[in-house]
Figure 1 (cartoon, rainbow, N blue to C red):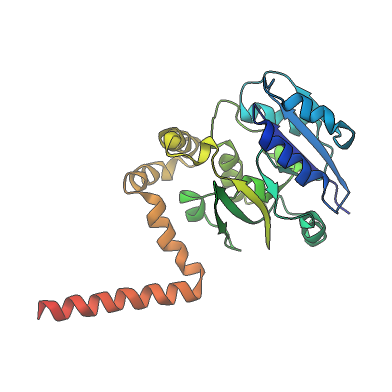
Figure 2: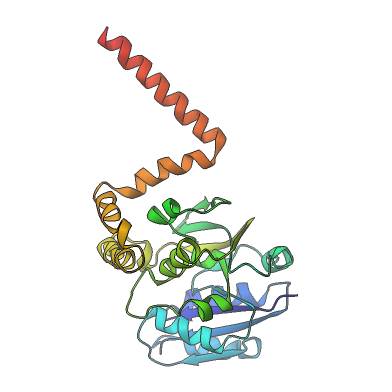
Amino acid sequence: MNMISVITVNYNNDNGLKKTIESVINQTYKNFEFIIIDGGSTDQSSEIIKNYQDKINYWVSEPDKGVYSAMNKGIKVANGDFLIFMNSGDVFINENVLQNVVPKFDTNAYFIYGNNFKSKGDSKRLKTYPKELSFSFFYGSSLNHQATFINKKAFIDLFLYDENKKIVADWELFIVGICKENLSYQYINETICNYDFTGMSSTGKYKEVTEKERQEVMNKYFPLFAKDYEKLSLLNSKRFIQILHIQNHPAAWKFFKWTISLFLLFTSKMKK
């Protein structure tokens, strides 16, 4: 069976860290290692880690250069075939997640992804993903980091996370690996995690940073499409791409076309 490395990055989120630790160590699938990279927290994080250290394979608490710097530390010490990042505050949807999904792995795939709940306060929404990925999908969206198992050879054959980026280094790995290098991937229609949607990558405050970093990736790896990306960003590309992706869901696409037809019929009658 595949060895999994669960990597948790934390900084001053002791309550979230405790939830994540308990979610990981209670998994019924036991062929995994647990790695925690703490950025030198000043709250109770270190004490919490020490309370569970007999369940943790490796941990460190020291200053780092940011979230991707911490993730790279975890990658470098990981021994698993596949890595998943379950950061503080994020939890597996139940204790049987690894037991249910790992036996279904295509071991040749570089990226294996599933669905996730997005949680913000008391609200929770299920996010599902297409079985077939495309450039247009990544143009306006991404895979959920906490619901994606990444083959360790992806970091060897491609690159580690860009530590100069604040938000989109995981998106960069996905879009370059899948859309430029044509690396294999697999969709498993299972809900993997409850994703804490209050992190900085999920807040409007960092929208400009996100767009700037994505534009840098486009300029570097897809220069012929960079201008298109810039224009679509100005036209609220996320909404535009969402419409395109309705085509991947027959029932929704049929309803969408029916709605448009009805609207056109109504407007034509109004003109008469």
